[in-house]
Length: 376
Image (cartoon, rainbow, N blue to C red; front, side, top):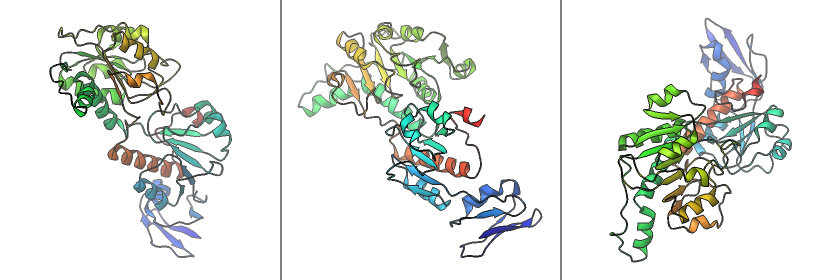
């Protein structure tokens, strides 16, 4: 049994009847529980603060289904929690950490009655049945800022690859063709880029695009106008206006009933093909958001009839994407959902999730709760 004694003047000291590796004095009584959990490199079953907190310390069982940075796993274990990287089922676990591969359906949630928290290591939560989680009293939390820079850079990479024919040039070069004369691209500078959704990632892309010399437009009905204005971005009340004005469209919204197949034959047909600088630059689409926002069949048709000049996707309606004919079109290039697949992003995601879990099981409410109705 380990206990804490002392007073607010001398600080609190932890004592043990069994072996313990260290003794800790804490001056911050108001946040004592958190200090204990994050500063002791030992596991003990029943710790309490005498005169402050008589409840046992909660040692959580945490399942990680889609991998986690090793350092983040170590942080959780050092805090005293049990982490299983290959769980056979979720029953018996207090929390589960998922990425996009694991689908937390209503059935999966029903089969895990002990869950208290679902942690989404990333941003999008379309692979989690939020209604089922809320009805079961399970918090759903994500790590909204950790992958922003990585997705920003991938989006810019796709924009440049599209307008400068980099995938085609690479294929030609590898097949022995020197196609310098036919691979004439266009600059991003002097063109209008339209964002569908203007959150953290879109704003990051916007800063780079503006530095290149692009004019920014966006549709985001949930964004305060002053935020867009602060980014020198024109915010439109009608999504169609963005398609009508912009030759480059970047998708950065969540997948929902409202946004499902928002990019389709009708919206693509509105794009002008002529840049703000008067250059005949064609129309270009990039999505590093969520599959299902883009109607892939309509995109293929638009590429075939040259309404759309290029399309680059990092996300697909069905993943893995399989053999969709879109993949074979010469003016399409894609990546297998690697927006957050950088060492830096995965480390940030892992640490943010580990800290979130440690704080939650110490009795704190995470800042990034998605289904806040559970807290009511």
